[in-house]
Length: 150
Ligand SMILES: [Zn+2]
Image 1: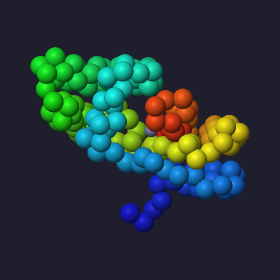
Image 2: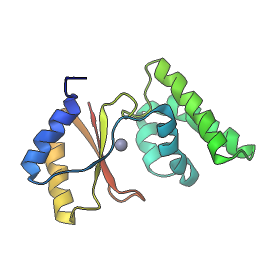
Image 3: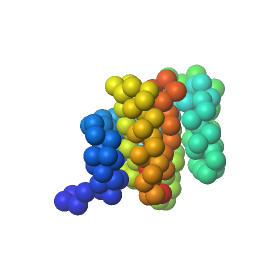
């Protein structure tokens, strides 16, 4: 692809304002990588699930059911991931995306190499971009800032 994705263009602008390079840890995800990203959240019933549940409850429930059915049958993690991947893959075929990482309109920014003050100013710069939705995931087990296109 010759054209730069809008989100990458926006993040280049953000980087310039921030005055320090930012590291992207997650870009586009396959359904399998999305299942892998969600699995630990189902294990711990983490708060991150609420950000999905707020606007994509039906999709989340279908994926959660695949997780629950699999674990109830004592399936191995890999087998549960395969089941979850199938559900997510079917949703993608219907142009339904539980995560904006699935249609390449989301990025995760590494924060463990930034100071608290830097994170604060980066969040302000990001939230100033009208086209971006910003989720502060810095207090999770894998600290990062998630951004996606509105
Ligand atoms: Zn993300």
